[in-house]
Amino acid sequence: MSTHSDSTTWLADLRRRIPEVPPTEAMAQQAQGALLIDVRDDAERAPGSPAGALGLSRGFLELRIEQVQPDRDHPILVLCGSGTRSLLAAESLQRLGYRDVRSVAGGFERWKSEGLPMTAGALDADAAERYARQLRLPEVGETGQAKLAAARVVLLGAGGLGSPAALYLAAAGVGQLTLIDDDRVERSNLHRQVIHADARVGMPKVESARIALAALNPHVRVVTHAERLQAANVETLLAGHDVLIDGADNFPARYLLSAASLRLKLPMVYGAVERFTGQVSVFDPRNAASPCYRCLFPEPPTRADAPNCSEAGVLGVLPGIIGLLQATEVLKLILGIGEPLVGRLLSFDALGMRFHETRLPRDPGCPGCGRNAVFRGYEDVALLCASAG
Image (cartoon, rainbow, N blue to C red; front, side, top):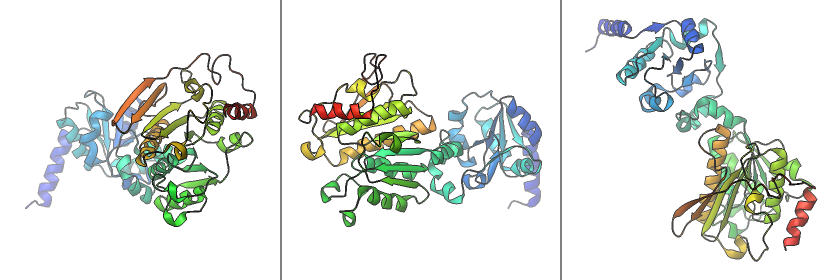
């Protein structure tokens, strides 16, 4: 059986083998480029953490460290609550081949007592538990979760594409979801529009969706507009958001969205479905190389050439797949991670279970974003679509 004396001896031996630095010196080394890792659990970090520290729980340190810092010679500082767990964490890093590892003596308690800079905890206990799995991703962490909480996403359509996108964005902790849809829930919607329920047939879709989202995550603010997107209201409804999800089922709305996206510098995550196939892309006017929606469809097709789901039919799971791909692109844009589908059109064939990627460059002659493009107002855009018939 282990004794107190044995524990004291073991800890003393560990301190002989692991260099320790006081918090003030750790902060100085951090300013010179050293990586400071806070190995406390998510809930412990919720009240606050040293400024600039990377939150990476002790239990996941060995699994994630190579993704965070592959250079075995890069200086690493490890901090815990009081300075003991950080010694163990530093020892683990040494075993993995990291050659310049130090433990912060006294841990966060001493850091705080000495009045050193801190980042206020963005997460309360509920958030730390709710988002625990994605917080463990180094690409998200508490900083990324704070970005999600501050983000405002507007969804045109609370139907087949908007349903899965809204549910997963709410689950991920996006701070505000704005839903625009003037339709009511019909029983024929339910096989694909999974945010709605049989008991809410006849209810405005935005209200039905709000109920479902509030039940899933009451911390997300849901703003609803039970109105049709038109030339007169498009900028008013979209302004002030960070990302736009195109879940429209008609071309007039998409052309209005595209025009507003360009004028408001608002990234547009496009999605479309028909029968057994779907498409996804990202049109980001903040990126000088990004195409816009009209680079893909310069002029609106006729109704006969592009029927909607009520006319052509759709496999119920297909909007779910495409809507989730749209939600994924939104999260990447908010977090600033990965490679968004800018300049690429991703097509999906459900029957063949195949994805196909097509390069989609910006068109210099595009009537929407080309060098000679002229915006004459949203009413002109609406007339353009009306003339297509």
